[in-house]
Image (cartoon, rainbow, N blue to C red):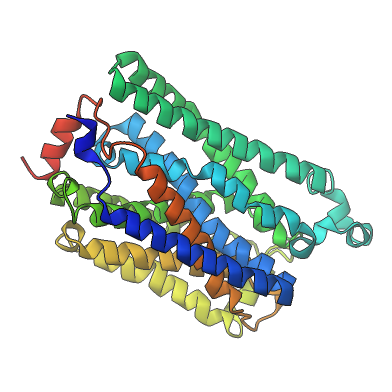
Length: 393
């Protein structure tokens, strides 16, 4: 197989330019929003950032899962996962507004507040600016390094297939998944849970893990269907591939719901004054409708639709995948609010702009990375078999 056979279709470059234009316009509007209302800007940016960042980091996790478990679905989508994960260094740059906005986002960053709060004083050894920045740098260095090694060794395997490279990728994936789980747990606590410095949940990191797995799989499905509309990938992706990806998305819809319900059940049954306000404020006022939307829209609807075998084998799966990505924003909005225990839903126009600003930049960078390599791992010994399995041969 020649490298030139599996290049990105020319029309994708138009989509890349469109994504970057949307991103640049969105960033311009974000700059206006920043000058108008700093606090709303930083919260909206953090919400949108966590969703798109989750696609990048979750894709790296899926890549490592595939190296450990095998499967035709992972062979034909490997380059998509790699391209998504290679955006992690750029996501570190997009994290800078959060780093600059710590005083607008986190109460624990204010010495005068900490001085009057016994709980914050007790947590000051962990929740302080120096340690916060050091942890963030460590996370991105580790994630970017793992993404670099996974992509580099995979490309080397294309040039010179070697069983030792395959074994090296498996070993990195085994340790990498453990490192991913640990770092994601702390990052979710640092960046989102600490918005309310008095509240805590031991399942919080796992909840983000399920959300990242779902969001990154939904994004990958949308890209698979997009690529399958043109040569040469229309001859590669088959109904069985979509079916497998759809089943994985169904699994993570259920997994996300299980994690959410587990957290609710544990906190509600314990009824502790330092934990229960998290849910009390989300079942009152306008937030009860957001909670209902999550239950019905993030779980019930996609769960019922994904039970349909025919839907998972057609392009309609991409429409459902895009819908799931939209619901990921609703989930992050629910997790981050209400602000200061308010029961009124505070939806700012920046909450609608930042997803397009960050998303446009992310999609543009992703498509650029996707075009730098062949769309298939040409040095993978199981590639031909994986393509045949997708078409039921």
